[in-house]
Length: 380
Image (cartoon, rainbow, N blue to C red; front, side):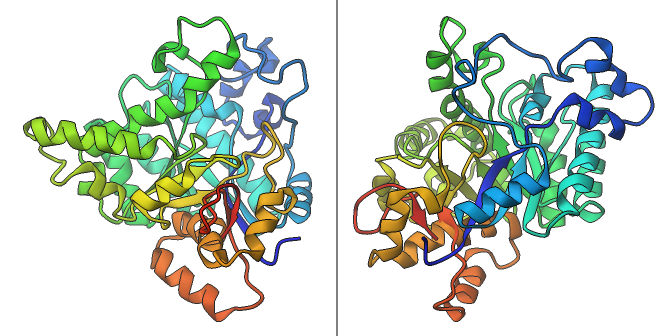
């Protein structure tokens, strides 16, 4: 058992077309299974579950709360599964319709079931004015924590100026934006020459996040919106030192091409505006912490997708709870996921609150480093 509770920054709902259909307005919902299609989103033929041996299905609040109790998690922020492909929807009107339907579904079926269940809203980036309206509705009326930004599928990179009104509204609302990838469309992240899912999946999340982080920094998103919190999900964090150095080098020679990037990219990465998930068995996390600090790393379970990633069930997490480094571990598992979603004082405020609650601490489980130099899941 862990000595603290964990805040999970990235869990998933395995939503179905049958669940979403009643939440559509008008006849847009007839495009799904009711019209002979398995999904409202473009599909591919990859065997993601390896014949049913990887992952599971969790599409109701009761099941999610049971998982959280068993795994020692206080809260979770829920993301879609099929909806990760929203960027590939080409018809703007249908993108608007499915985002509204999904957000209404999550609000009614999950957020009203328990305050421990949080969620990000799907936004129709295909129609920016509608995306701004939907973000405002999702946060102020539905109680969403922020917005999901698709790392794959959109015709423009997320840093493009066309999308800046969305980030301006998120900053105004005090909500976060979370960038998450999918394996759909391997040509997007340079994997279209591969014929096996193991190859495509290896590249998909980190390469897609490298692309989007590059665009956001060089096109000035963290510069223009200094209070906006941006999360990069499910890609690990070990690539950050290498990519940071590469961006710094490019910026030092060609900053004239990035006028809205007014300081070194590494300075933005250390600013506390950008957050990154650490994978459960990511061995290079200590080096990331050394280069970038502890404040930007958080825990994300990815439940019910591949692998047992629950903090209370992982031996390294139990070791972390006994380690002399438990304070930093608790930061990553509890405070940093909460800081990503909550803002308004960020890590410092959350840290002060947690210190006042000892010994009954509710930590976030961020798979970041153990401060003693080992790596693995850590309690925050």
